[in-house]
Length: 623
Image (cartoon, rainbow, N blue to C red; front, side):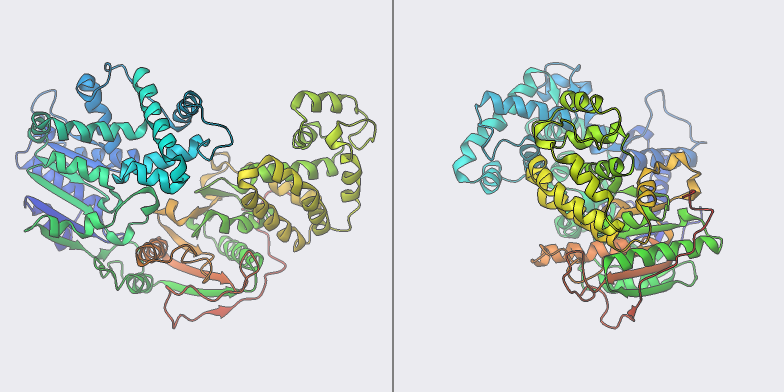
């Protein structure tokens, strides 16, 4: 790879503390691996270098790229190998090497996943005699709060009191202590333990910290903007002779997980005399897209000015629709027009601030049978409440669909699978037979027949929504509002559809696993958080309205700054064509204007609802 002058300066740098501010698409990874390769070419053993990144995929890619660059440099023995991995992967290696020194029984400990951790939380709750009606009785909530405390190095008692109330704080602390005791007695560690035990050992055992310092005099940290306070404790404990951190403060978007943008912003203040280098030549996007990105974060302390190194043109398109359904239909038409013009679906991505803004879009994609792969949250068709809803409609369409009827019956309180199966067996001539149905579902055949007689798809949806509401409230008490919101969005879209029940059900019957189609045949649908690090030729950001972005809960400047960075990340995913849209009436039928983080002079144009969308045989299945 040919390095540009800014990248070459990084590769040649040998300061004790080096900060590389690398903007989106500026060749950050290539520059990092060249810096490591240059160290090795100039005499540093492979084994003297530790490279830390945040995903196993990134770690694997970086390791392979370094090895390709130094393939002609002989190793200094069998143990002369790079250490490349996530914080957790490196910690796991260290704990295996001397488990007793970390307070574990032996090196045969097990690392448990989140579901297994929740089982231990349940045992801890039981041993502490916590009543099932207590606000503490939520293993998931306990686990997430305790994890956040550990990763942010926050005060445990303050967090528990804030979450569960002061009256329950002492009991919550006892549950946490019991959880820890249960793990240790079983010789297991959870995901957070890997880092906590590493940081704690270096703090209490200076000799061990010095040993690691001698082992890795060169440490490179990728994606520094995603570090949290626990990560920083580990870096402080390592305190290597040479530390290179690489990142972009403008892409720090995981504050809700505990990442702390101040760790990269304040790096020069913490390390007086640190060298600061910038990578601002962007090899991904046209300048029009970069101009918008620069404008969004122009007031941030660590803002970079991205310049297009491609010299290519870019298209920016600002669209306003009346409703989210119109917005979704406009997007479907946009993709189809592109495919008919010869572009591949894989060149298209749809991004949104929140997974819930993708619900109506998914309905439209299902309805028009457009294959897609979703990142961030469940797909609409996989959500439990939608499966529940669809099961009733499947029986309406096909009175002999016993599988759908089994799911429909078990939604009624007090009816289990055994009771439901016996009832279905007793109605072999058709599931609309009145006969004798289990108590709570006695009227089910009546309202299935009523729904079947509805004049159109929209009326079917409205009637079923009214019937299923009490079941959603009973079965999903803690998440009822969110799940009812999904059903409401589904029914609103059904009201605007011209097709019949068969067409609607066929859309949900398509298997959307992308490995089932040719990989070119699916578009990407993603939350912005899940799209970080990815890029596409054509990107559409939906839901860019004033009640949708920034998030309504973002009231303080710290939160608003992260919302601006989130928008920056979305914009910089596009190579050549970026569409930004919003509905003037949001999914809750509230009026809204454009997102205030976008330029005031953005040329918004009103787009009418799409109708008569042309179907592309390349993308669509038979209906």
